[in-house]
Image (cartoon, rainbow, N blue to C red; front, side, top):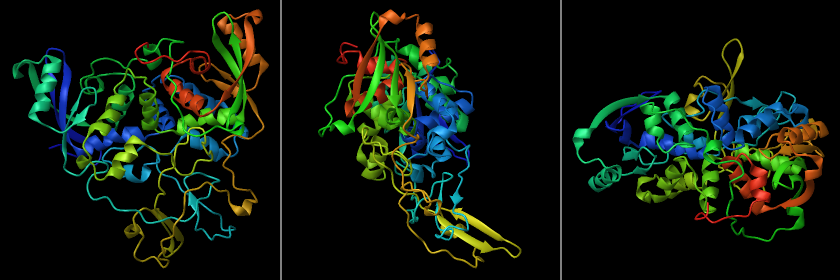
Length: 484
């Protein structure tokens, strides 16, 4: 059985001595829950935490999107909170993941912002983002062993992150696949992994088929995802999206195209398009993997195999069908200021907290907790439990209406490069792009395209897979997976 401490998990691995690769590890639900939680993490969080710990990975255009948000003047955003939502997006499964043995986002303490004393709500509303108020909070259900999988359940995990129940037939099949003839070429090793190793597994899973070997045995350095997919080579097969699109549901974008090379040099678009593209940073990894899978594309990494393991595992291994659904269809954190109609991704459940303000003898103290038992028993104010849908609202005392149209102020125009570097519109920036690409003025033309639901999904997928997202979506003819 895997041994656990507050900050680490121990397990055993069977290693092929000839290739110095992990054949499989044997562990319980705690470590599998940690791996499965990868699917619930927003892309912006993955990039931020990986960069903070010197593990940058080029995931298509996602790093450029993140850097663009960092570099754009805060005054262009509706509030400072809107910028924070993109740079530090919270997970829609946060309420469940707080019970994980190891958490990817554990280096950022949770912050709460309450109303001022002048607010008519009387300190009852608070939020995870400054300048943003949420409604009332409801009680959460307590964990009863395990987060996604049932407590004390045993699993084996292969080097490419296939998770399966342990059985002799599964082991024999794995040995045959890896050409392991007998036990003499294998050895059993014990490992103790903490936050650093888990983060490295996540980063490796995006680009490698052997993330366990690379993390546990330091097999090789992480490859670059954009190098795995040659520039200009991504074609995503379209998928029929239900419902009719009204003209008002589409976004108009002007492309500056190189006629001879048939590539997008850059685009010019309003804040509605940039709101859409920036929102990709708030989307959970599992949602992106699902769109890649649905569109007959594939990844060089092993994160897709982890997603498939959730699909293939029998329901009896999960705490409930609801927990399995959280992983297969992960949702947004319920407080972002952008209603993503084109992607149609749903919001997660409300979190649950208790707030108390009490006298300590010489001053007032405040506490916010998910467990009512943590409110001090000597509190003169024992709070009643109140409920709040985590719908973004601005405090009425600020005389500001409810806003959910986007992260950015408008009307504002932007210049967007093929690899999704975004800046407020600038002719000088556009000229520098053409100069860098060595494209003469005589070789460019303007094209107006409309972005609807299907284009939005393809933009999401190509922003993860390719460093030429605009070209891949608007100028490449889709291919089947057999032609790619």
